[in-house]
Image 1 (cartoon, rainbow, N blue to C red):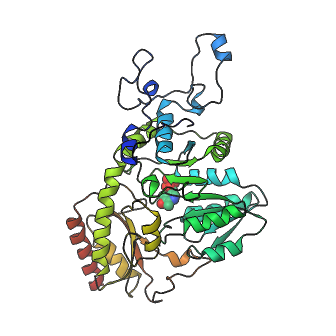
Image 2 (cartoon, rainbow, N blue to C red):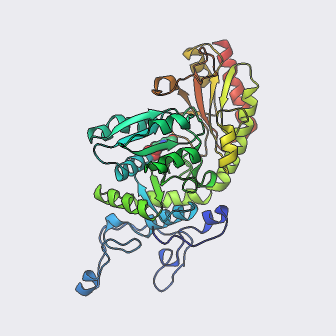
Length: 408
Ligand SMILES: *Cc1c(COP(=O)(O)O)cnc(C)c1O
């Protein structure tokens, strides 16, 4: 939405005020009569007469025209997200995070172009490069997330965009985003950054040089494991490209999901604070356990990219990974099955804790896994998403899992 709230309050306050324009939260005679924008289910917009129909604003944000252009429910969510992203002129909503990534990449790439992608990107993002984008004549090349010099050297005339994800999925290395975006900009590459881990409260993506900040709203914004949505926020020029591409694809999100996401957004700040504190404490405890070779958690001193996290980020979240010291996949499975409070399943960022096995070695193409400084025997890991449970209960549960690993 163009025209986000010109609100200079702190992010915590903007989480509360964002998207609550009086004409979206009331009726014409009682603007602002309710707190949250109602769910406007509408495909057709009726006009009082033919003159009004002819005067309609077919492609202007924030005006009823036809359901595919959304309603105040979706506009309010987009507006609230724009208000949280410094430097953004607008936000496009997508039916999932993957859809947002595809929409953003399709907005900045054309047949014959090359996309440079960080080697620790989320697997479905890698699949986009190997699949859909390749089908459209776009080549993807992967680069080592921790080597800005190699990235700069990889840029040639055909490279038109770069996909960053910091910290990256599963292995959570933080990237030197300012260095990477400076090199990208010097060569005219568009920078798309998957900011799902930190979100705008933890990392100001556009201020650090990204052109488009993408999020899976399924994670922290939804926060309750009951919806799928994605977003891409950008300044004026890239917002226009995103919008044109999304409209061409006919994308529209349900007002019910937008309403749930807005509800989740209001409490995202306090949830993230709690998750981050619990995750940092559990990560520090796990690092002391004899079964653990490495804890991959940006908030933890000594973790890959911790210094960059401390330099560039204003927050964290509950998602981190651990790598076991030796043994095998069976022991890892015993750990997972030994947990009671952690649900086994994909996704993260909900109020409840989750665990999934991670096998990053299978995914890497440009850079080695295990991490350069890790023993080759230490290959089996799990990713933990820390929820809002009492961290003491979670620690006791993890201790059960480690006992099961010992016994395996
Ligand atoms: C989950 C996730 C996505 C995809 O989001 P969906 O809403 O599940 O499509 C993208 N990037 C990252 C880093 C993710 O964890």
